[in-house]
Structures are given as structure tokens and as C-alpha cells.
Length: 178
Image (tube, rainbow, N blue to C red; front, side, top):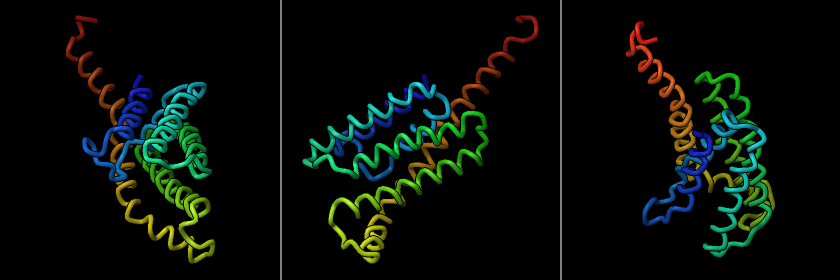
């Protein structure tokens, strides 16, 4: 249930009007994909992928952007992060979760900025143009990285907290209640 809940939260976060929730590149997207990959059935990865792809197309229509190759590259990244989250299926050690989250966050920065440089003709198709594109993306990466780390920590803590609460409730019953 939690994997679906966290993906829906990420979806709602994306569609929330900026007047209600300012879009500052601080979002639970990566955390929801990693968590889904770690806890949900692999047969179900179509759900977050389809939901977020539909969301992206709808948002592009709302903001008047065309559907271009960089969006498709983003969807491939979504699928990759769902599969990457599978690395956490057996081992939920905090260091492993942090390493996967950092890798996911950095990979989005590298891949998405490369796609912008490649598709949008905003920068010259030179090494200097690519460097300028990455440089322009750095201020956005700060908030993205912070959001990725915070939400990943929160989402992956929830099952631990629930398990501890269940143990506490079991212990409160006392030995005679079993």
C-alpha cells in the first residue's frame, strides 16, 4: 500500500498549482520511484511509470510545451529508477539507501541536462555549450538533491517506524495476552 501512496503523493505534488505549492525542484519523485521499486512487485512498475508519464504530458499541454525526446528520456529514467529501487529490495541498510538515492539524484541531473542540451537548441552543440547547460542547471540541482535526500529518508523510514510501533503494541499486551 505504501508504494502506491508515495507515488500518488509524488503525482499530486507535481500537479499542485504553484500558488498552493511552489515548484522549487523540491519534490518526492525520486524517493517514490525508489521506494516503489524496493517494496512493490516488479509486475506493477507500469503503474507509477504510466501515472507519471500521463502527468508529464498533461503538464506539457497546460504549459504549452511540446512532447519531445527529452520527455521520453525522462520516462526511461523513471523506469530506470524503479528498477534501481529493486537494489534495495533485500537490503534496506541506511548507507545503501543513501548511495542509491545520491546516484539517482545525480543521474537525473546528468541525464536531464544532457537531454535539454541535445533537444532544445538552447545551447551551442559544443563542449562549451554542454558545460553551459550543466552550469545553468546547478541552481536547480541544489533543491532537487535536497528534496531527493529528505523524501528518501522519510519514505524509507516509514516502514521502520511502523514496524517499531507494531512491536511496541505487541509488547504492551504483555506475556499473558499471547
